[in-house]
Length: 472
Image (tube, rainbow, N blue to C red; front, side, top):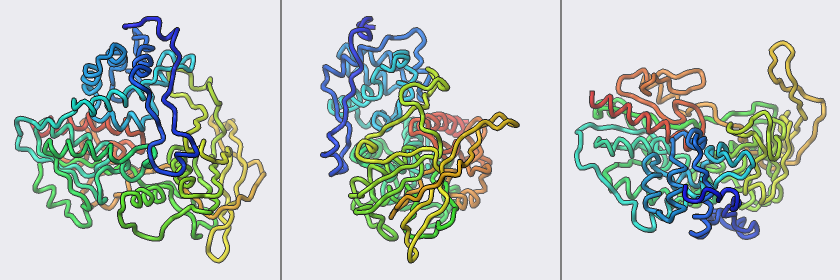
């Protein structure tokens, strides 16, 4: 701990974001960066706690106090060495992670946590710019072959770790480019896709093979892959969206959120799109669902030129700063204002959708109803009740952003003979192995939709289990 009083004398300073009027006109990353000296001062605020709750909260077990101290002392290379001990791709989480570590930081008791996520991104970018991150292919190969199905965060992490063990790894991706949700689901204004490409070049140089436009069960046979490889890992994500079956659902203008986001990313990548174009220009947009995917729809709709964007949430509006029901060091359920919300959005809570209203088969309005959450006397649980108040919202486009329920690939799982639960998640044992010998699962496909960082943590554990299986 180089400066034991820094947390008392230096306030939290975030890098901030590009001006709204500027960033709304493009899809460049919205977050800015601090200069190196300010970044070191921010790292100095780490208290090197006796019990590092930041380490406890991180699914990857990153050693935050250690690399914060090295960063403060200007030892950037050593800080990178410590960070990369536990983290395969900090360039992704440094941009996308909600920073569970910061929410459990002791300084967050006063809502003044160390800027761990930004520090992570800064150390990683320094490592790239200085050439410390180089392709490092294994010196010895085991002769074992592994296929990874899916190239999202869990698929890439599985491939990276198994290749480091010396196995021959091939990654199959159904889309035309590698990256999964990070490539096509997350907007460019949160993650520039050059960040993915930079890492993929290194992975290819290390010997990992990537195959795109390869959907197992459609244009590729699972049996053939199974016969030619020693192990298979399913990393197909959890992309089946939750639907809203109410009156008028068939009207034109109602889309799943991810379809909208994927199409926009295809446009920016110059890739051909299937189906009709979804464009918010000059339209009144309603986003149903208050999470990150909904927020991404808000930002994308604003950039496309929507005249009005409204986002509704069925749950109550959470407290703005502190929630006594989720005290530190737990994840706080508090109001989150994203950069997309700052760019223009009417936000409303405690609302459920009653019906979609249209004219000539096209959406024009949505009827919503106010709800309240009360404790059920019999069960003691919160239940939702309508208050009787309704409202009509004018809308030309609706995006359903109510979360994901399970992987889209039930057909693939059935063909493989893999057991999955009622939620559609692949059933695995404590070694991450499925019901089919030699077939494993990781990330959202096994655990349900979650965070990028949790998918990576799952992948690291699964890679170790696959390696043990191959070497037994």
